[in-house]
Image (tube, rainbow, N blue to C red):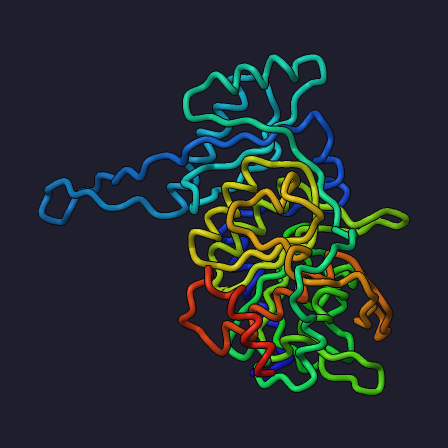
Amino acid sequence: MTRSSVLNWLPALLCSLLLCGPVHASDTLAASDPLRLIVTQPLPAESPLANLAPSGRIRYLPASAAEQDAKAARQANLLAADVGAELEARWPIHALGIDCLVLRVAADRRDDVQARLGAMPGVDVQPMHLFHMAAAAGKSDGLASAHDAGSSRSATGRGISIAVIDTGADLGHAALSDARIRAVDLVDNHAPDSLPAERHGTAIVGLLASSSQPRLGVAGLAPDATVLLLRACWEEAGADASCNTFTLAKALAAAHAADVAVVNLSLVGPRDALLEALAGRLVEQGKLLVVAGEHREQFPGSIAGSLLAIEHVDRSEQLMTLLPGDRFGLQSGSSLAAAELTAMLARLRERQPQLPGTELLSGLARMQDTD
């Protein structure tokens, strides 16, 4: 398999693990309206099935994954029927031991349904939140930029995997021809070779993984890292890129299941209990969670243990990165700062794979001194 191969089996595998049905962009946008609720309840306990052995004795065998999911689906349908709501989607989040449901309710019954759900033991309910890609510039905490450190760097991120939760990207861009990129579409279920060539994801992936283009001043900051692009956000004509609780929860669950060292979240939005719980598990796993935004009062900066990029990287100036259609352009903001810090950490992890995550930031200065 060549370096430029995009693994065609990964979307089907992750969707089978996450049980994610098709969600189209128009449906996803509509899913942000106030008539949709995110509801979680414990996954059914695994119960063995009785079978008759050849000897005539009854034996008990573990239920298959399909049987367990069928049981969870029946439980979800019963819950929706009990409160008089429409079950639009469900998926298990095994990392938290919960089944996550999207329920649509009538406008005049929303408060009543939410109150009934909130009173049920083990059931949590919250709104479907909407998030946008980050763009605010931040101030420096004194660390040199990855571009400054990159001219003579010896580490390139080789052997390190990075999950980028973002929009789609132009994976056919000439500057990504040698990049190690795997892609999963959690919005429209596009195959990797037909992923939407969206602007924001192209810029982030390009800053991380593009081939060196000296004539244009473009060079990936961790060009030998493997990038897992999880498309949880989408772009609409004349509007900023958006994502919601549904798509981001699936992406965080996929990052939890994947063997990645760093997770990049270049987006901002309101506090979200489900997403913060999922992201918190990533931190507990030892994954480095690099986030955009201006402060800790909004998601994903609200995640305990996350690395808020603008606290560590000065990226107010514009950077040359990739644009869809084999183009290049200047961009700036906290999204780019998050990608920059992500690359710096990937390179440090390559050099010092055993260094605890809590010591990586102090190790950045030492890395830059020797680059």
